[in-house]
Amino acid sequence: MPHLKRLIATGLVAAATVLGATTWAQAADQEVNLYSYRQPFLIKPLLDAFTKETGIKVNVVFAKKGMLEKIKAAGDNSPADAVLTVDIGRLYALKEAGVLQAIKSDTLEKNIPAHFRDPEGMWFGLTSRARVALVSKERVKPGELTSYEDLTDPKFKGRICIRSGKNAYNVALIASMIAHHGEEGAEKWLRGVKANLARKPQGNDRAQAKAVYEGVCDIAITNNYYMGKMMTNDEKPEQKKWAAAVRLTYLNQGDRGNHMNVSGAAVTKSAKHKDGAVKLIEFLSGDAAQKIYAEDNQEYPVKPGVPYSKIVQSWGDFKGDTLSLEKIAKLRPAASRLVDKVGFDEGPGS
Ligand code: FE
Image 1 (cartoon, rainbow, N blue to C red):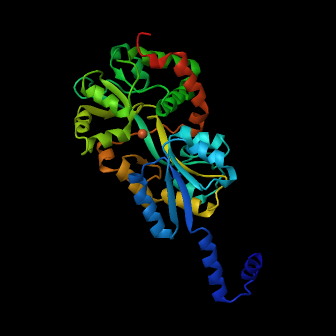
Image 2: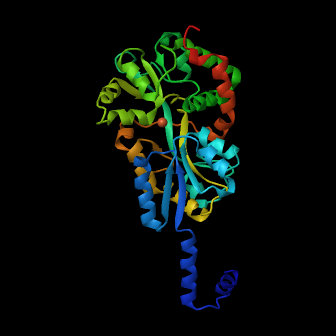
Image 3: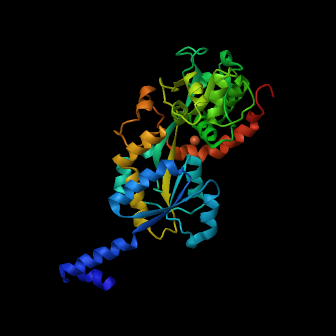
């Protein structure tokens, strides 16, 4: 093949041969193996659109847990070319484990704002999500809670519900508090939030909204898209009631903006179909895919200018914190230690 390439470069082969070489080059990247934490319902339409546009087939393995371990254990023999996952914690763990490779792509740099991707090109955010407050429509007036810092106000004593401090979404939020207030400031804040909890941290994000609906607390800290999922949940219509009881409130709109996290993708070091993997991630960062993401999961497109879903628009415009997720990732261990140090998961009054 090198010989043929040289011939093509020097223009010494007939057009028919050049065409043959092109076909060969495409065949080598006719498929991509993808490990995905993201659910089939969400990514299937995206992958179908990709295959339709490029002719590249995507083989997906849906992983609930242990994706990193699998890739690590297989080493160079890992079949995974690309990974798709949620939360900066998981993306950064893959990077730290040394199983990713740096990608340089003008398309990705153009489509994805710098704070939502790795400075070395190891991972790329594809959607962003806001960690917001869902407040009781009845018991919290508009403007009463405006910032994460407000959560420590004694007026909210016994009124806040949140899942475990060790949950990845909360670890990232606490890491952002360290970035903005230093470790001591963040510790003081976390103690203040703990003192205001209505109960021991428990359940998932939606369970916090349910607790507001049931009157257990007045403020739930959750990711924005869960609100959208509850609002539209025909299979479990009781969740529509939970959503109807709360008002989605973006925090820190007067200063740094609401804390943001991402779902994202990366190319593995051992990728056998690197070109296809890069093309796939580029496609997912493009207008068509970003629109599907926005509509199907009520997340925010990372690509500027792609419209939010109608539901997301109904919550109004907002300002997101542009703190780099790389910084947040680096502060995660310290955040996790703080959770233990203040005994956050033991709940109030301990
Ligand atoms: Fe989630």
